[in-house]
Image 1 (cartoon, rainbow, N blue to C red):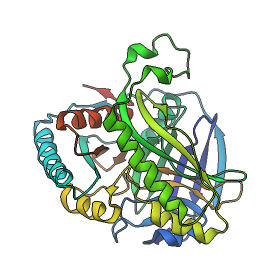
Image 2: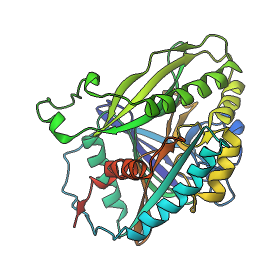
Image 3: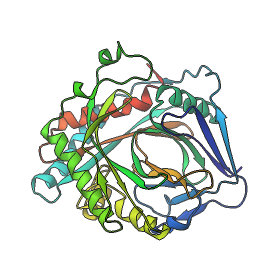
Length: 356
């Protein structure tokens, strides 16, 4: 086998396996090229020679019921994050200064957290199954290809989705931690009522920036756009503010142009888009790789195109694992609050492990 992915769509009672058995895995460097591709797409934040867009050809597709979960106790040694904390504060200052100077209306600052840990392929598969059980409402995927390496993700955000008659996307921004006590009286699978969450002006503004940007991108390919009111959704123990957007596409070539225009959205990058992307690549201090890119099936029989933004993820290397998280900054942002938001987001993946 050349490469494979296991994935579960939100609220599904089964998971899918896509395998490529022969040949080389296709590598692309332009999102517009994706319009004519068929397979499982793994796209980075910014394509490079070492981190290209990868298309896994579906030589074999299978669907499986969830097996009985096996024990999978993998221990994390809590790192001393004083250095990480200082480094984040320094980069935050660069980003915030640019916002105060009004060079940007929004920037997304992300960071990593690395732990020494050897995880076997079988253990990675067990982590995937545990993530599916823990996060039934999220898109969960395990990806393993020679070019990308091994990635595990549980993400709440759709980039673009094909339905029976229309296409859909969403503007997802704003984050609040929901205390565990709020879940105590709920039945399995239930979420707190959205009225329990009060959104501040900063969070509402951040979400509206994303909505406005997506609508402007869609106007270039479609005049029939439908936009919902912002509403609260829940992802693990986090609440987000979301607007649902539906639209028409008349042909496949528009899909490639739309992906090129949409990605990276302000939810993972900033505005103005291209300038924000260049600023992040120059100043963030590390390479995001496939974090804040997107993944999913495209143009495959029996699967409608459905792409998800790669959030709440980890990269599994030979002797260590790396967690990724980020948050949107505005001129009104406070460094302590933004650091804590990344801590909260890291929990989605870290809660699959036992911390020491």
